[in-house]
Image (tube, rainbow, N blue to C red; front, side, top):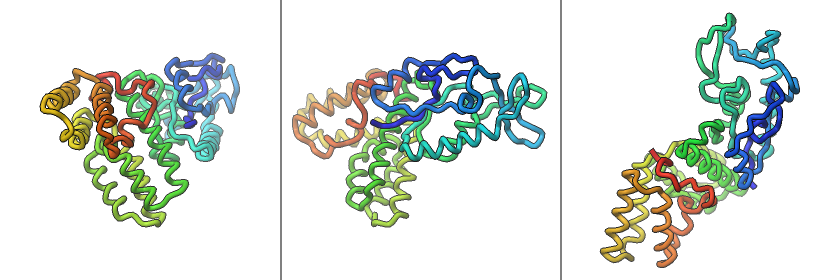
Length: 313
């Protein structure tokens, strides 16, 4: 099962500063699909209950994690924990991370930053999440509250599955394996970026068995998978895939298919409606090239990622 790092409190572990949890029902529901590897730097250092913390910008321009009551500087132990956690994440082959919003340790977006006089000055990342992200620049990550957005949820989970498959590719790399991998991801990559899709195709076409080639492909692939899918770019990929089935269809079937594609572009129907039409004709006419595309079969259907018209912007 694919492993995901997660802030411990999100899965019901009572490790917040006051001994409570911040259990998130959606995050917990993902345990059906992923194995969680929990982390909590503050609880590991101080246990609970403990004083709450905030991020302070000191006079030297350094961001520090400081206790709200005692003013104790917890920066060093949190950084040490974070670096050790990064080592564990590498050993565990973690393929994504869900962080706790607003946390001075785990928050990613808009974590409050204060001056030494306690006046708010800016926003930043938590010390733990910042360290993990710096150690793994292509690792998919999100905050639990943002996963309520269908668009962010789709892109995060798709990226996690793609990250996992890339890890598997790099365990036994070969020129043939890279070409097969790229072929499988062709239209999912196209749905992210035409420019990167072409670059990756060139790398795969002229691939050799050197580490440099695999590293170049891996980095650009993972970078591409982190691009948020836009509706027009997805529509472009769907049009390309339609080219593989159009000659099998009657005039009436073509009209229905193309009008449904336009309805997707207009935000009237969700992607799942298009995918089911593709799957029908792929099976009926045994179109092997499309059958194995990651665009259709990367993640379990019951996740419902493509069932919401708001999954693409």
